Length: 331
Ligand code: CDT
Image 1 (cartoon, protein in one colour):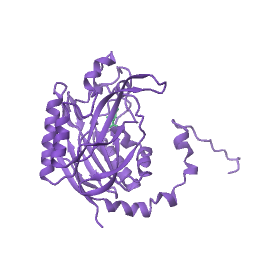
Image 2 (spheres, rainbow, N blue to C red):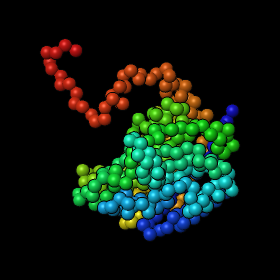
Image 3 (cartoon, helix red, strand yellow):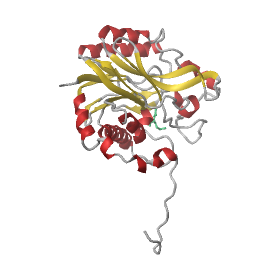
Image 4 (tube, rainbow, N blue to C red):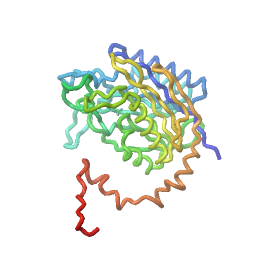
């Protein structure tokens, strides 16, 4: 029996620093209208989709960055998105900066800031929330960098793990869906935790500069897109799932984000790709039954995984040096 969902990546062109949320939300509503006309059932918007990618801007006093954060989802400003989705019966994924009044590990309730995404069902319900685990960049102003990347300053590491939910979407009674946010896509551990929950479709938003600004060595321009696609294609193949990976693209606040949003199938093939640096909708029919081949053969986890040998994956963070071979030592 066929389990088909038509999914789309709704790439956004740049959102400049002065552009208000109402304008970004208007652009997204127009993309939802286009999605509806094309028979799309699930739309994936990028990471931090409501504003410019503000971690490139330094605020000495972190509270001055509060204007970039949402304290509620939905809110008065994001309600038009939820209304449009309900009107068209389309589910969507949205990335945003979240400010939550929440207890920390010590039990103290305080303002906590996360790089968050939600998956919203066709009736406007929030089905699942995820908070980014792998925060790239740095916490303090870095004089060596041409452009700052202050995610470690503005966000706490996510505290929701890598959840997967089975929920109705489009014409299907249930799809197993999970989320990753931008830098997470480069970490195979993140994909595997989703794979171990039988994820069928991963929604993933990103904001990635076209140039490596870390001044740590030369990286050819074209390799930035290659590494992004390589990571997503490998994640899908090795975990037998689809991914809808959506960029914010173009020259934002004077900095280039590379775009190249893609939809990938469980064979690791790109089945749709954006060609612009603008607001652009790319759609693909995703036959979820395709997930079964990998899952029952090469990547039948229950038969082939060897967790007893994977202790280092969770037992250590940085790499250690290996033992040095000596000619006389028995092997
Ligand atoms: N947003 C985000 O996570 N971007 C990173 C840029 C890495 S450079 C600090 C990424 O992995 O695409």
